Image 1: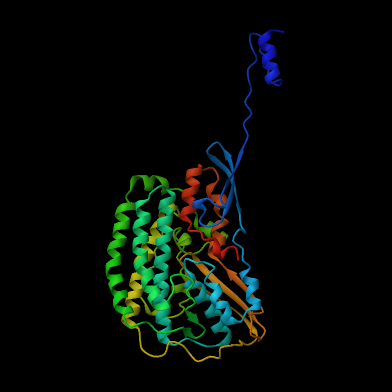
Image 2 (image 1 turned 135 degrees about the horizontal axis):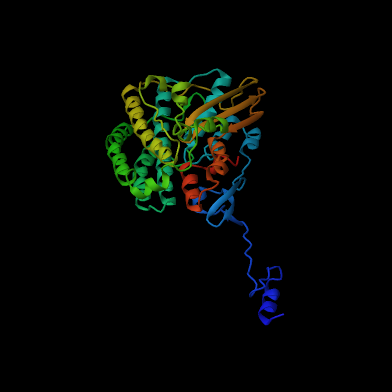
Length: 390
């Protein structure tokens, strides 16, 4: 045996030997397993994605949940209905107002009470401001995932104006604890209407600026157009709702279809996409902010006087029974199912969060794409883990 052959056999004994020369090395390719998160900034909280990679190509993705679990549903059983109000806005902390709204709607359904008309107008105004604030984060964070820093700063600059208005009413910038069963905690301050009208007058021009910077950007288009397509039947199969579903052409919005609160009084459009890709999901959120401005303006024009809550005892006891009510949050349908046994505390509480359905689609949307495309797809879904790990 030659010296060359001996060396090759020592290094790789399984290599085939060429009779005319040295052994030809054999290459064994294997999948790489990579953890993206739970600390990775593009996972939008504490989501862990276990990636199986073939080079830069994603073979499969396994979402791993539970890193933010706080036992919200079980904790409701040991707190009174009012005590739990301070906790529920910590679920989807970017749109906590909607968490409170879904909760009080379920209790009001159990008790057979209705909030005064003025309170419903206030709920709509604050809710649509909160929708704008949430979409600001969704768009800004999405752009930051794609490497665009300027849009991130622009949207957060304008988000401060909306946050100041909500803080003026609720006293908080997050975790509002403002809604009550049968109304809201207190009335709008005197200076709110002027500040809100100023905001909705100036904000549409800011949305135009976002579009000038983002929508026609060649790099953004190439990264998002035709990427992560959700077909309409897939959205229905997976329970996708909100902008993620409407981007796929599903014409469904609880504000219009169910017509809760005073939404039936307002004229607004439901933006729809055609292709269900990352670009359409971004575009739907842009257009939804425009529609929120329309709703707020109509609510300010129509708001009536009167009380903002009804008199209820501090320790309410809804009659035995069950109720489910849902609201249209910035991420889709958030539902609250409450079972009462007539006591001071919920006997059982179950929450339906739209982000969980969106996460379930990640393996299907990302397989066969590159890692950079995975970041774009996950960013376009607008995930928030506070409502998932509950």
